Image 1 (cartoon, rainbow, N blue to C red):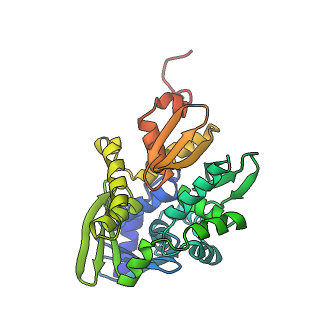
Image 2 (tube, rainbow, N blue to C red):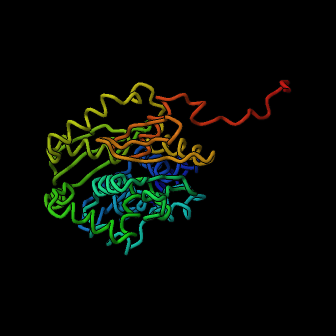
Image 3 (spheres, rainbow, N blue to C red):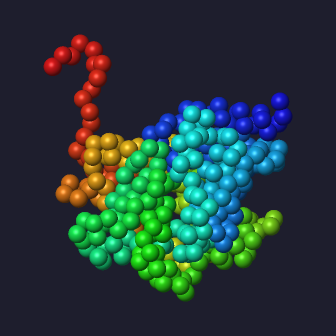
Length: 344
């Protein structure tokens, strides 16, 4: 048995405990944690068309590579390539990865792995039309649907890694919306482009559900072990620490962290896993989750009064919704089963 095969088997053994209900994002983060425990190295690099992710084993050998539209899904692609994810989910997880033409279309809108900004513009576009954007858990991923004021479908995404990925994939399926977003971003600052030109490396480690991101330029650490609740948010915080993010944006992210109660009741699962579990249940009981942007990402259930605030992603907003709401009213628990000696 070679060293990389041994590394793979050790990582995969740890990931077998992950559950489908945690979704693609949760499984990706759980696998990252297993890689970290086995002393592997996970890196991601901005490229014009998206993100290149590389996974090395505990001896520095490359065991997986992946390319996708954002850091997280690129890392998932590398985890799949390295056969590190649970074997029973491998084919399902492939469904959420982006195709080559899709990657190029999204890069043509903005590029360099930046998906939040165009997605927020699309959310505002739909809102200004008097329409709505809704997300739903489907299979192991998420689907986004954008509607106009007459409830006619503007665009629908395929099954995607996360809600933000789903929204940007919906954008490139409607020419008018795509042109609108592209025009809005024509002269916009792109942090990913700056990082690409600086030839930096994003490096990740995960433990207890949280992620530490570092940014290196050659041998120099521009930011080291910056803690966040997921790959995307820890990267953003590392970009702030490294001086890549304007001060106003940094203040907005800090304001969110100040308000987030999760840091006091962390459950040692990634934000993506927890958000996916909430989304899975809401989809299961037929709840419609509407997503908007009001400074932060907002998830709400129309007519029910449930609202959650997130950072870069609706999954964090759904986790926030759960812990700031009456959970029994939100998730509508099913009747207890196999309860001993308690006939009704």
